[in-house]
Image (cartoon, rainbow, N blue to C red; front, top):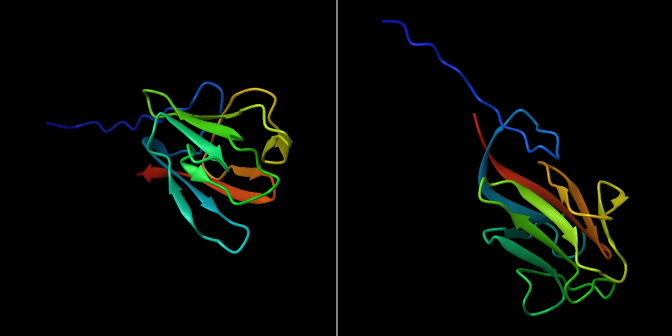
Length: 124
């Protein structure tokens, strides 16, 4: 008996995939400031970023709003980012967010003077 192997790679309809089978785990890694390398698990359906106490990712940055943006996970494990009407806006890969958009592995997120990288669990 011969078994045929097939690999299925799913891409989010709004974003470009990177050839990895995606899972539901993701982190943000701070790549600027004195806390370089600090990571934050994005293990909630709604993950708030900002200076406020209610935020999963608390940012010590005067240019960051109390609730600056949110990273949201859907039931299939895809992540999107949305600016929460912040004063200074949110940048993803150098472009100011105007509406919710899909996040992809390695995306660069700028909130105030803080720079993050979005990473998702990979599987072969």
